[in-house]
Image (cartoon, rainbow over all chains, first blue to last red; front, top):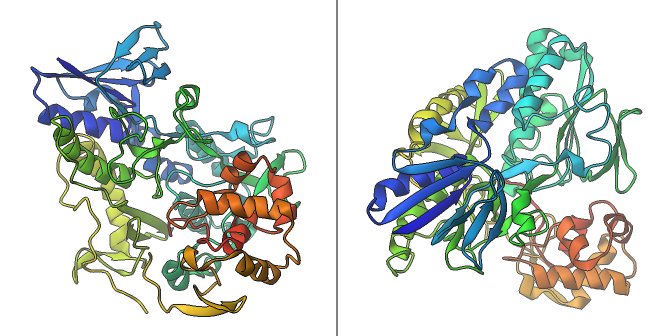
Length: 412
Length: 110
């Protein structure tokens, strides 16, 4: 009997468990999933919570609902991974679990503790995050009675989960404060370590002034060194200062601590892997999927989804000694909420930047790439249902895993 | 590589190289130390000191698919602090080093 061990029951780990349980013979393969948390969070939904669009109930469900029969779920964190011994040690009872194959899908977490000043006495008073459910709920509560002022969104460093979420937050905030009737009393500022809100050449040309048109001021090349919570200012490494009344931080993102402790990660605890197959270059029985992997594409649920489709086909060949032939291309597909009931959509991979066009049907759409539309907004809202009911359970979505050029315009 | 709208060229140290609209080299193999010296001048760095070169060499060595390492990777790999990086390559060190080292600009996903 062979044993497949999956660490993490988020988007990637849950999809792998569902798909491989169907593909691998139950008489030959045992599958175990380990996760420290009983609750599965729909993380893309956190963005809507501060503005009262989603509630807590929209974004949480019991993990067990999504783990199929024939897969063991153990609720525990993992103390250490010992790849040489092909085993992990559980934190709750110190027990060792041995494996033949390991899938690491432990995700990425925000680390406000890594920036001085963030997690002190003003944390969740004038400084908030929206990448955790608690943070998003606290911010929702704060915004209900906020009278206006200077709201700064600051990305500490890249990579971050869902790299477009900070832009979406600002554009939804613009809409929200319009609806509240206090937009003229709110200044919206985006301080980013990148050279602008849009950095890819074609997106920058088509969307370059999108934020400015909405009255959102961009502070580029801003690398925060510390926050002064009493003076309410962000100070960068080159001593630029950005003042705020309300700070919405996107803290440093790091992989799970167990990755660092086990000597498997880079300096941010993300695990280097082959970008087409997700196989570790160091251990021939270890794969890494989802946000936990150090890959040159976005940390996003869509990437995890497309990656898992390729991985599952490869894995059932790999364990039989066959070559892995379904090579992942870095495909990502992300909605960008732009407020006032509209959204944008981007579709790209390792080598093709986001281009304008129609998706998924060339010439038809109904979704528009790199362009605002109401259809995109409804697509994004509908996606929550798809996530819970189709995607996590490993059912097929009628979207190709690899990126297609059909429907995209090559702009000159 | 990414589909480029129109490949432009520039001349550095007597050599024609391909650049994008912001002056980043498109092909890292066209780079040479002499080119780095001239691009550095355009970026307002009059002289490249041994410390500058340590950073440039690190980035060239650790570039993946023509992409420069992140600022965090540079600081942990070279032992040069972020603060020092900002004094060596003022205003956006990651971007400046990438251009001087003939590598791609640090980008987001969109």
